[in-house]
Amino acid sequence: SQSIGVSRDKLRSIQILSRHRIGIPKTAFVHELDDIVPTIDRMGGPPVVIKLLEGTQGIGVILADSTNVAKSIIEVLQGAASQHVLIQQFVKESKGRDVRAFVVGNRVVAAMRRVAQGDEFRSNVHRGGRAESIKDFDPEYERTALHAAQIMGLRVAGVDMLEGKDGPRVMEVNWAPGLAG
Image (cartoon, rainbow, N blue to C red; front, side):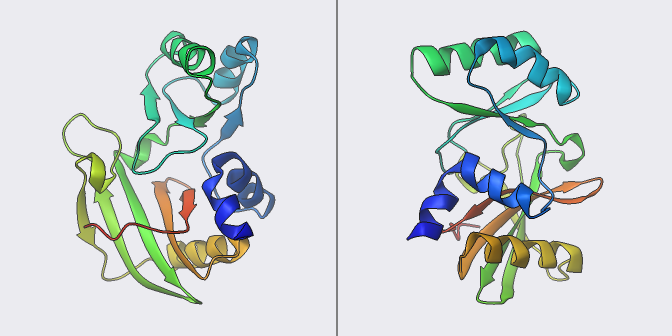
């Protein structure tokens, strides 16, 4: 149950993965509104992805094209909705695509690439993304998925990764991964 609880908390899981040198997009938790602009600057500027700390199926994930838009979104979420958020580097080279590896025990039993449709940047099948089977799974992605699931203490997991220019960038490790697609 501890592993499930940690994997549901995006902030805690990102902290744990980064401590174990798993590749992740640059990520920050911003509590004070005055910290938003300097944080985005440290990430290399916009666009950035804003994520609710808890959310599934791409709900609560917003792409902000400018610093002002990001600041406005975070002000609304933290103020009116009392929601805490993460700011994450947008991995441009992933181009609305990600990879989900299904881990069972010490094996990746299947993998799929999810591709966003139209102007959408989220590739989740529940957001209209299209799934493609991956037959020859890249060994680096397989090692990353297995290591991420082990770190989180999950024997069954869906590891979502962006295809970054420096290799896999883990977005999250799902304790109850959807099999749609």
